[in-house]
Length: 403
Image (cartoon, rainbow, N blue to C red; front, side, top):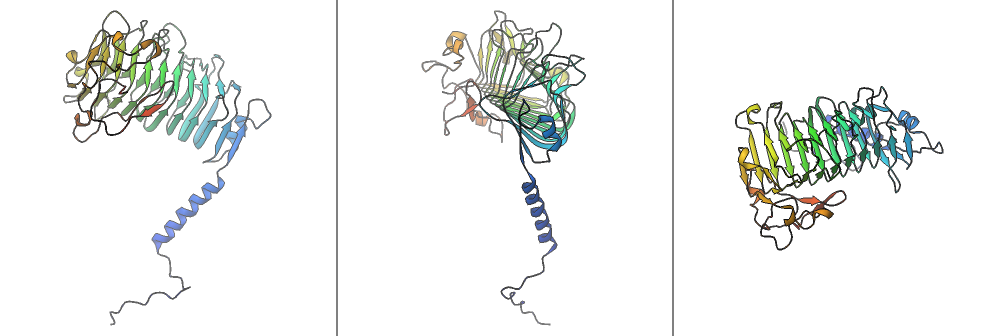
């Protein structure tokens, strides 16, 4: 038998495609077909354009629905296993307005499975007959909020339990919780899902409920402004009752003089609900405006598994309160300060001024946890968003701002 290699195919002669190539061609064809089908639909509030409900009914997976500015009153929308983008266009956000009227619907917009992006839309005035109305409600799937706003809703965003669901929030504002005694309306209410991530967002003016409540397996909150303000009266600023893997980096966390609970960040109060539990709290600025001391952090060790890791590095603790002395774990580079030691709290300039003795007194956050870089890569930029830090930093100051 000859062992000589076969001659190369002659120019113009096709070789028989292998099964692997056939599969690649099939996937490529499917992708191109989906791209070819994707469309942009334009809707408006006054009937001059297509109605929002009609566009949702006509839209196919991959389509973008562009929503013109205006007030969309009384909307009650349901997306079942859809892959869609709803994007507000124009100088002002379109408003999905529940008008504060209770109905049998749980939310202004219900997402049940699929993958949905909501961008540049305001959700306002959500009410339900049971007092649990939401601007947006997620029942499975993946949801991303980008540059949205939520005001005056019983719950801004609420999710039900689904250990595969994910929520990503970017540059979005939550505020103006209804002032209902005993209502316990949370600005953000996340159930037992796989992951919650929040970046560059703002939470203000809560009432009785928590500003952020997350039971997710993984909660990652960075470069955000979780500050109740003078008019707010929230309970916990961040509540993490089931523990889980939690990362808090570069946030401003402020408790109002009218706050309803002395705890600011709560971890594990209901016991562990997940196999892995660890809290990494790095470069946050926590402010207590009340005369009485606050719990800047409270960890329920008796409810959590033995060996649960708690790492708190380079946090700036402003006002009276307790932190490392009442919580076991690794606490390094954290510093206490007075309100008067910050640049200008009245204009939300919470950085340490240039002459502060605390500048440069942090430890290297890149070494806090073996194999994991916990250094901040950005800082909150008013009124919304995150501004990248200059790379190559060699010294670190405690708190959320390095400028």
